Image (cartoon, rainbow, N blue to C red; front, top):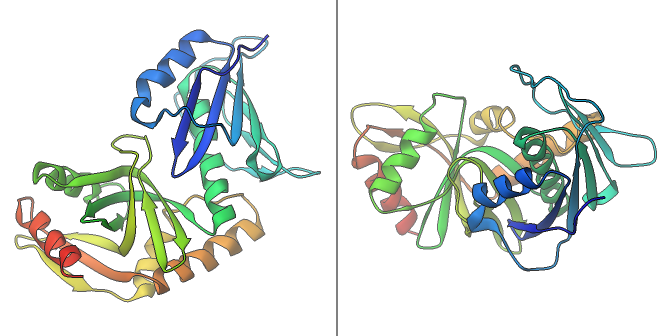
Length: 268
């Protein structure tokens, strides 16, 4: 029997409760996501079951591919877990052990929730200044974590340095932190989506939306692994980049990087 849920998280305004057979797993979620816990009613639930027989923990992980199933909903299968997500993301059942399957399904469900709002879940770093945010995306090693560390050292707020939740609002776009790696339960008006580059002097460069789009499309999670999911991603990326400034931050590994970003966000 599953216990009544003891952990409810709030991510970008979406609330999800966990029901875990393994009490140790529930405790690990409490330790991992303390700032994102909430007492608000859950909009979705994730049930986590132990496999009938122990499975070897995989040392190689592939990206999740949430595939549509007949009758609606999605299935996500990994090397040592399987998950079924109900239509509209109302609930999910995960069979597996440890944090990885739970984290994976939580990300897939959050991407689906954002898609229902017309938004995306993007691999990147988002920083906030005076209620305005800039999101920088790119491949591993592009400088995202370095920029986040420089921004934090300068006293700024890093919304997140892993996965950024973005969605449209009445007069623009919104960005919110998520709990993976570095993240805070805050949101801000998204003003910039851009790329990063290295140099000995920090500067802000305008960049066309097409150049940013090519990188953004490689770093946004598909709401589902299907032709319609890919069409959605293309269309939403286009709408996002049409509604914000696109730029490249070329920066040095010093305080000047934060100065350039702060001046740009503060000038609006």
